[in-house]
Length: 436
Length: 122
Image 1: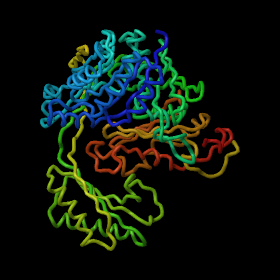
Image 2: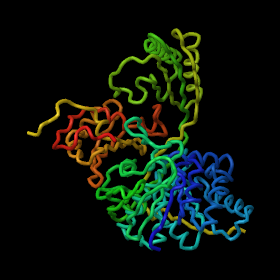
Image 3: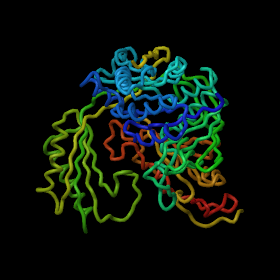
Image 4: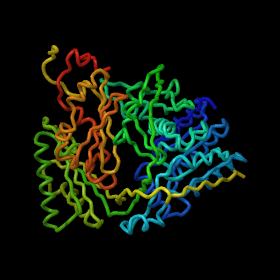
């Protein structure tokens, strides 16, 4: 195969489905890859699975199967996704069941397991996370290559690293060896650019009037035409909103990276310092120049544990003197919390519209005409959180003049920690089933 | 001496930026609109100045890396997100707005020799 066209069909667990459908219908793709997981997504999915053992996969799964996978099968486009989340096997079973009902007999669905290491966690962390509900290793591209080599039409995994979802199909199609470090680095770089979807095509970009985006309500998902030498042209469908320029690609290349000369992935250590970008046509950018070094000796494992509760209470003040009244309300709440002996793990007060984004680093500016006081609190004891928030609610009756619009919410906290585990401890497995 | 344009301007007039999160670490990429201005920005937008800008908000060190191929600076800030997205009590747990604080830095307006002044914004 000389050129492989790979598209991005999802960049997070709640991404829109319509842009993926459009890309499959009009993009003439060889592969559609979908990143469905952020750091917290898997822990939430694991909690759903604990409540119902058949669940724990992407909440969009039924729609992805009926609207996206069926179209992929019609067109010979391979579908690769980490939408299995906490239950890849359950996701594959549900996918096969739906596809059977839709008459897609013979479709080959591969499931990648081996990322879930919760039952072995004690061996890795000496029991430091005794209440953990999820522990998942970031798998690389190798099991995807294996599944596609075996003829899979659909590959479903759990915590497969975002960009590896793209590298896998490229390495399969171009026969890149698992120690061809520069090629693997090129594939990871292309995956890194694609995996955040609209971040490449005009999302997180609009800053009018400095930077405008055409039809931002209709951004297209990106795709790449990738050559066997690892160079690629990034693009989006004609007629979709947004833009794909050297500048949007630069912003995405540097997104969520640390040292660009040593970007760690499960497959390869990527050196992005030599990456260059060139606008070859409207909404088309060529990328080249990544270099690779051997993969790290360890893999990242993300551990999620319930850690009590997080509460937020907000109240507004407006008009002349709004800020003084908000500050008085904050002082009042803190007094009540102290007098009531409410000891939280952490308590924080923001004035939304003044200092909520940057706290003590907020530059001086003029006084706003309205301000929203926000009290945020964290505790292992839900009742402490609720009692603090009750003090915000009481501002209606006991607070400064004109306190209005109280909103309160409490949610459980899932604390995340990262471990590094020797890579030979993690053994991904591929199994295949055919739709009956 | 080059014929310098007097005064300072906000970084936002010459560069764009995007912030990302990994655990309790935030990164902000700062990228000039005009590649010719990379050296000018590199000289002025230092890790020390960014650390000073985020004093009290970022509790760990600030490192600066360069991506010479795309003419970008990457600032990596540790202990920057109130313990990380999963635990933070901040309103903007991901620090998506951090990039916009970096763009408030006042920098010397570039001279003709540094690049083309006033043409940055497209």
